[in-house]
Length: 515
Image (cartoon, rainbow, N blue to C red):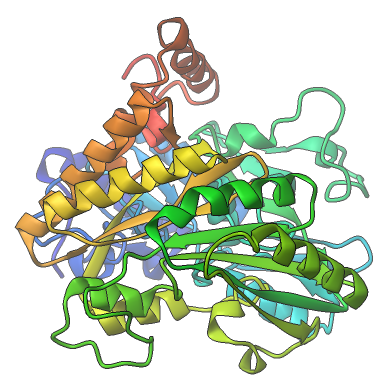
């Protein structure tokens, strides 16, 4: 057995291994290098020295989480929490502080409650999108979940990191209703109406009596969330989903400007995904093609949806209302030269095998299609680091953003999957800068390219909404209003909740004053 415990911290960590083993059992304390490797940044190289975990603990109950944080306080060791560790492109389970102990919550994987009439579920952090979907189907409940592009991750983990899906409740943070949180002291708090021991309203009403605290535990390190309520969408009678496809470079600004009023007035439901895919010199390649030996641009075109620009949109509910929405959208984009509107319709209870692969996500069906396409066309050892700014829902801004990204990628000799998730008033960037994990120079070039993108975005007044650990300081330094007053507030909160700074230190740039 090869230990991964850093020598400079071996005394405290060795004692921690023994004490954690006593309370969790040996199978829930992972110390050998092979077991711990999964909890590193999945896209780092073998030569990586930063953001390295020491070992991993996997509690299966709230009481075990409480015991872990109390021991960490006694020994002065840093913990780093991950739900399933599938946050690829943003570091996976990699901690900001080297030698942190990863508290991985996969074993806390129970769907605790599903209420079909009220449309909610209560889940533990190890529950994946696949798990909740399958449980709903097993109960024959007429409910839909919202899923991100890859369904293997944790519902809680994705939500706490402000993740997105694409259906009506696609803004996952907005669908939260009630949390249970273990604080650094080991105390357990329930937010909202869950603070009443006999509450029947915990997942039905978002605010309790006094300040609402749920957002305080998102993108922070003030506690470990062990339960979370999430609102679900009633299964629609029918739904239609598909794409608005444009083919010219100059189409992006008018396309974005045409979509904005349709989002503001609710004609388009859910959150559209708008992707950019520069045309290869020899034309686009279909997803089922053998792209071995082809240029990277051709491989990318096989991985992404068709068209220079592709806006995936969806409608849910009554068939006559869907047809009316379809007509409004068709008329709104008719002025775009060569535009194509492709929509496919399904029953609300459609089975996954009946759905076009590109339609699975807006159908609320978890899947791995995007990762499968990435590996098929870009290789099994493809990695990516993500650049994810929030920009105005404005055609000129979108065009400037895309040109900046593609220009930096071209200079670096890289390709990226680029697009935006459309909210009503903003576009959330979703740019994956691809590289070969085993190519150190290419990996370094990808990281440097994203740093350049972050700097340019900041000059335009835009900030990332999520970031890899190596980019956290690049992001937080730009929140400079009032001499970085917001960061000062975060530090005061950290001092109050976790004065020793044991919980995920440095997460989203939040540190106790002692650090």
